[in-house]
Image 1 (cartoon, rainbow, N blue to C red):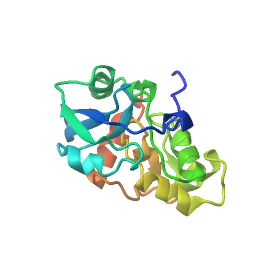
Image 2 (tube, rainbow, N blue to C red; image 1 turned 45 degrees about the vertical axis):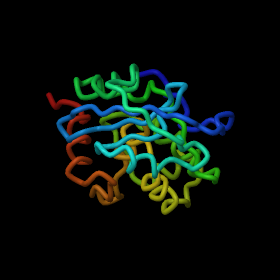
Image 3 (cartoon, rainbow, N blue to C red; image 1 turned 120 degrees about the vertical axis):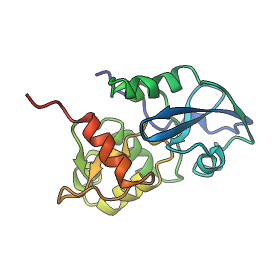
Amino acid sequence: MSAPSPAVSDDTITTVITGGYATVDTPNGPFSVIADDSGRVLASGWTDDPAYLAALIHRSLRPETLQRSATLGSLTDAVTAYYAGEVDAPSRVEVVQLSGGTFLNKAWDALRLVEPGRPVTYTEFAERAGEPAAVRAAATACARNAAALFVPCHRVKRSDGSLGGFRYGLETKKWLLDFEAPAED
């Protein structure tokens, strides 16, 4: 697996005038992606409501208008490839998120390095983000992640092995984790 591109880039803080969005049918329901005009994911998730996703985008990156497309090229191709079994495909897509704080940005980058089939605990996630004591902040990073699947917050579980939370429902989180789990011999 190649290293994913960072989830955050400080040189991307510009006003996005027009964003594109597209929706892909998946076994978990409609999955929509909003992208900037450079083809970077701004938000994504299991919904067919672009306004819902747009509200998750940091105000400095939120497009003033959204234009519907049938596809978004490599972005929607990555979603299709994921569901076809190429579970690392979303990690090869560039994502832009901002939080206004440094920990969340580092945490989102660390999330992109969590490999499919190898979920981590919130404690391990905090360690990977460089702040071992920031377990609650790690959970906040998952909760505030606007780019689901591309920044795989579903790969973080509680220390007791339970799923924890997920914006798109625990049924979807469990399905994704089961789908990514290595086949047993």
